[in-house]
Image 1 (tube, rainbow, N blue to C red):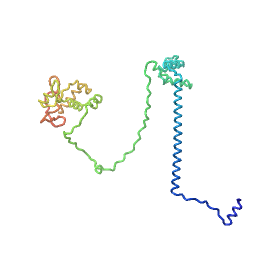
Image 2: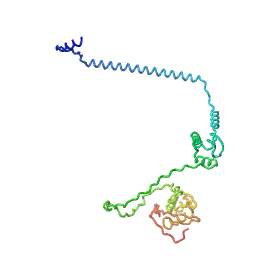
Image 3: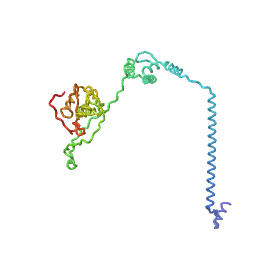
Image 4: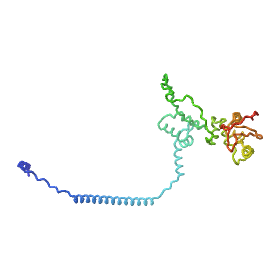
Length: 318
């Protein structure tokens, strides 16, 4: 039908027939969904089969390649021969030994001065630059048997301190924030203990702040008599069990070695502790015995804790 006839047909009031669409029922929708799923499963199965065939082909080719590698003649590498060839190659490269002021080669320079200096000289030669004076000076030091210079770290820039203005007076009063003007000492009970590890004596040998009479007192407490201790002064059976005294018997030389101080220093410390009543220093034969406390009613009472005190004799202190 021509265009003019089609326009005349429309002008006379006749309309074109509309296409008829059948309604989609649930049964037809289920059929379409089932067909779509079946087509998707078939496509996935085909892809999986193709992947398996490709993998099998790759494995077959790899197996053929391995078999062909086995048929190739294997050349053994002689490491010693390779090292000799490398050494000969680097020995053939001429270089100048600035430390010995004579001709040399790259291999000898690397063995003598190290790879860092050798590579620096090679870089200067390839770039047509002067060899740094610091590198030549370091080569002279190594040639003369002296250690190379250490690189100094750059010092941090010290900025001048800013001048502070006049401080502003605080407007807060101490009594408003509960500030205490003075605090009284706390009375500690003797049923609390503060354990100190024996490693403090190792540190005291190197730390002068721990070399004092207090460390000596801790040392004497560490070496006090215990049950079954056997020594020439019989500190447990005689002094502890019979005389009911807590004693320590350690030679002055031993104390000096353990605390890292002079013998005169140890004597000054023991005399100071004796005069203050913290310990009691007595002679037992040719050596000293240090009394730390007493046993009263099966309880150990120490002089340093203030549980018990003793009256200092007017006799001489050794």
